[in-house]
Structure formats: structure tokens, C-alpha cells
Length: 353
Ligand code: ATP
Ligand code: MG
Image (cartoon, rainbow, N blue to C red; front, side, top):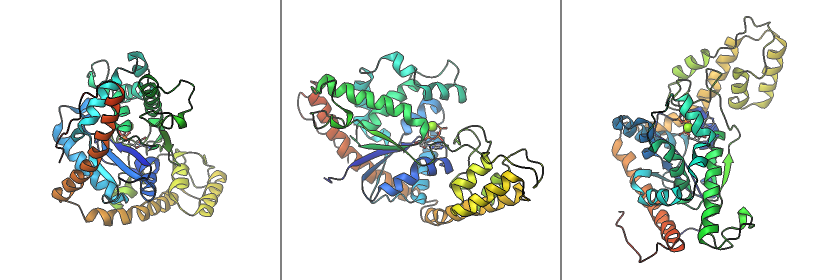
């Protein structure tokens, strides 16, 4: 087995991947492929927490996300893209970890609260919905990763994961409660206390200028959008500015996007300066330049996607191979966790081929 440090991160199949995923997490994943063993989970069971009545859509989105990841430059030979539902160790660890977290601690998670509000879940959400926060600690810890490349909204989940790792190591592995996070494994802990590795842009705002760009909020530019669709969406950005000579807000959504997606920093500085002064630079002109920059970035992704578009068998092969690699690590972790927590009665072998 490889000695390279591992990372784990992933996506819930609740839609297609968008620019927020790229800047918040996937770009980092692509970079880390060179130095780390990478595991990218498709959290398809978690998609059931809010969409159990739409299994067909979850399946579509699952396959679509694999295509999106490959398009963005994740190399399935080097990185394992895998299905949560076919890694049984994750479900087993979820049950065990659910015992290590106080109920109220889980329900206090701000990301969970936010989702209940934004997705209008009211008070009729399933029992499984808050359980996903516990499940996510198992998704991560099953791989004993050093880091988790995520957007800002995931930091509270990561904090929960770090708590589970500490508590497990302290309760079952004799790690002292004063031991620093980085020393848990050296002191005999099963689990490293993983770090959140937030991308350069931890929270990309949507084209509505209000909410986080999100696959479920109708405010996203998708990686799979055509050049025309991209430009159309960018043109829809509302700034409230009336004329090219009206001084604009250099921090509004349009300027934020320029800063993130126009690669030439001098040009960005120039645009922002002219914009702030209202020095004859129209929103329409900027939107054209921005749309072109985004399309230039997406073009190689479109080319890579063309290679696996329409072909489900290839996508399923990618998932099968990734899941097999994921099971090798997750089963090893589960065995260690069972040994430590007194559940190691005998070795079991599941045929997870
Ligand atoms: P949903 O609305 O269903 O929660 P999502 O768009 O938030 O979907 P997730 O699958 O929850 O997508 O997130 C996958 C990863 O992408 C996470 O690490 C998350 O932090 C990151 N991410 C998602 N949206 C953004 C964004 N707008 N800016 C930065 N990072 C993001
Ligand atoms: Mg989310």
C-alpha cells in the first residue's frame, strides 16, 4: 500500500457541479493528486436524506458528478472516485460514531440549521437528515486522511469530525486529553485529527449575488453549461448600476467574479479601478470579458467531458474501480476501530469485489 498521505472529500449527488465546487474544492483536489492518495466520495446515501422519493434523479446526478469530476481534471486512474453506498464500513462506523456525539451537539451544527432553513425542510425532515452529519464524520474518518479539501460551509462538519476522532482516540486508544491534535496517531490513536483545507475562494456567491452558489438554489453556473449558457447567466448578474459613468461597488458580485475568474491580475486591477471611478466602463462590457474568461477556463473541461459523455458503462467502471480501492482502506480502518473499541472478536472477510 502507498505511503503517501491520504485526503478524502466529495460531493452529494443533489445536482450538477458548478463553479463554486471548482474554486472551493475541486481545483485543490486536482492539485493534490500529485502528492497524495486521493479518495473522492459520491455521498449518494446522503442524497436520500432529502430526496428519498427521487432515486432516479440521484442515480443520474451520481453519474453526472463522475463526468463533471473527470472533466475538471480528476484522473480516475490516480484518484479513487467511489460510491458511499458500496462501502459498508462507512455505515458501520456511522453507527459507532453516533454514540460518541451528544444529540444536541449534532443538532447545533450551523450548516445543518442553515440547510433546514434554505431548503425549506421545516420540521418534517427525516430522522436520516441530521444523521448525515454523523455519517459525514464516518465518510471522512474511514480513510484516516490528513486533510479534507472543502468549501467554507463544511468547516462546522469538519469540526464535528475532529471531535469524533479525538473522542474515539481518547476513549478507546488511551490517548491523553492533553495530547495535541497532530500527535494523536503517534500516541496510539486510530484516527488522525484531519484538517479542513479550504480553497482560495471558500464561498463563491451565486449569480443572484445573495446566496452561496449551490446546485439546489438555481443560481449556479454549471461546469457542463455550454459557452452560450454561461454567457447568458453572466449577463443576468444584477448590479443595479445605471450607466458606465456611474461609480460602481468594487466588491459587488460582478467584481468578485472578475477577481476570481479573470486570470490577468493587472487587468483585474484596471477594471476595478475604472469601475469604482465610473470611468466609462459598462457592466455589459465587463460581463462579456468575464464570460469569455470563464469559457476559456471551461473549454478544456468540455473537451475532457466529451470523452465520457453518454457512455454510462465507462462511468460505472470508474466507480467500480474507485470503490474497490476505497473498500481496501475503509475495511482496514474498521478493523482497527473494532479492535480498539472491544468489537474485534474475530477477523471477518467480506467479498467486496
Ligand atoms: P447542496 O446545495 O445540495 O448542499 P452544494 O452546492 O452545497 O449542494 P455539496 O455537494 O454540498 O454542494 O458540496 C461539495 C463541496 O463543494 C463542499 O466541499 C462544499 O463546501 C463545496 N462548495 C459547494 N458550493 C460552494 C461554493 N459556492 N463556494 C465554495 N465551495 C463550495
Ligand atoms: Mg452543500
